[in-house]
Length: 156
Image (tube, rainbow, N blue to C red; front, side, top):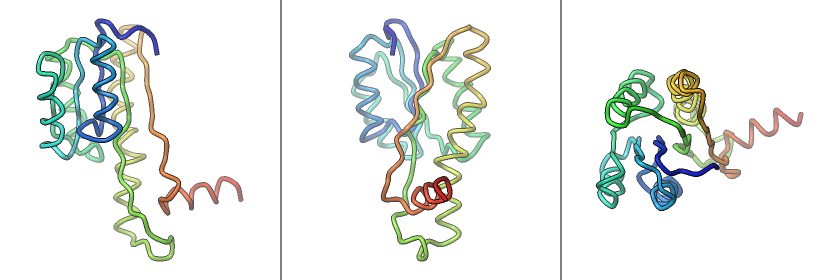
């Protein structure tokens, strides 16, 4: 990652855990602003409250395209630009594959894959317009049945 001074970032799932650590690091490294998009809004607010001059919290279910687009529009209104996107949000439904329900499968795919797509779909044109952007993604949890299945298909 290049110098973060003056840059604006969006971190999905930034309310706690790895996402909150990313927010902390970006601000420590000089990011001008970090937008925390999280379906767990109280956690996003708590993290943003630690950095009132640099962070904002937005309630967002990234599996919902209209929510993502509305949140990114709010970020642009507040910061004026987005140079960094961190697709960190993700859920797991740890279960043996044969025990996973269709509903669980669809929730994981909608958040972890489609949600990342929604963010990319909205942010990439902004980055292209400014001829700059950095996109970071998450490392997938190896215990999650969905990923075990996808890995199996890839190696089959």
